[in-house]
Image (cartoon, rainbow, N blue to C red; front, side, top):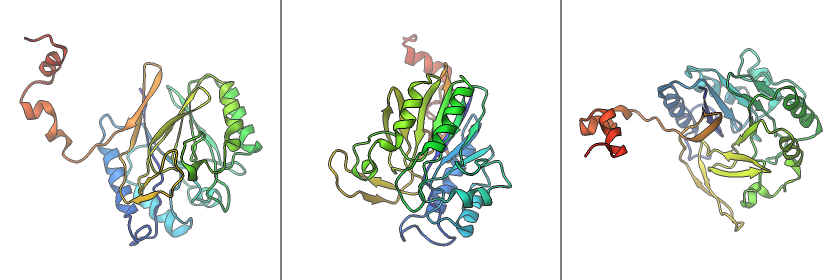
Length: 283
């Protein structure tokens, strides 16, 4: 049973500063790390799906690296539009966190239940996505090399969201991804970030799940194209839980003191007895 945790869009800034003078992204990330370490059972790995820092550089990546250092399980990184894959490869090259290499900076994570393909949708000098032929060739090779169940992770959402500032580039950039996924039924799901709110959709017949941000949320107009509002609050980590041959996904908060609030403790009843009552087997 594989337990994979996803967090996204951490947007770490220089030490002692707030993002836009409002969001304490360092505190939010530190709290997420604490929640992940407290989860039971302990997750097997953590994916951070892009926009690790607000401005890529030694000071911000150093700050980010210190904040995630307490994580007690393997951590894997991908670039977002705010990152620089070249800097990431240099800065994290002495770790296993970012094994992606030039020119595409993509890589596979092999697991006992499923494999994860970490894609790169970064486009230099833009917040918009890019997924050109070289990256497609890599994805094609990886999908053809194994029929093991596969999770695809990418920063930008490869789907139409109905949100103007996300969809403004149009669908052409992910058309090639969709065509490849349609040819490979072992792909279970696509996970992503970027939007700073949670949303689910489809790319062809494959579900896409976009996680909210650790840094802050955007209150975005759906269907109507209006500028989003800023909410300086994080979301809990997302747990992707392998069960019965598939992935079950959703936010998975694990706050301090969670055991004290368990309903078996508050009711002073054995948990097995409570479950029997839920089944209606006790009168």
